[in-house]
Image (cartoon, rainbow, N blue to C red; front, side):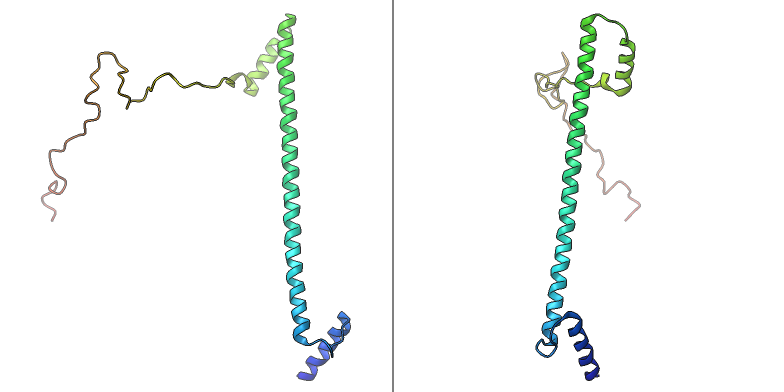
Length: 154
């Protein structure tokens, strides 16, 4: 068995081009294991780099698409404004139908501002004229306790 192992190790030495008499079996397999670990680390790192490049590429494409769409919306808006300036009434219904179908007519571009004063029910200011707001938070009182609710069960 030992002779067979030595013979196989010498054939490995000739295959990997090292002298099996000067390099011990432990050194060779230790080097082989460290090479494998480093190789696998490099493969993982290359995979991560490739994923990051793809992610950056997708983000760049999405940004370009968003900019293109923004320019198109601005051009459509400008065309609508120009159409109103010219007084040319042709295509107005088509533009309105397109705005309704795309949902552009329903977008509220104004920023909402909060109402003056607090309108919540917990507010101390009366919101209903003549209403008595003193008893708003009174709790319900129970006439029976829970442990005596069913006298048959014990």
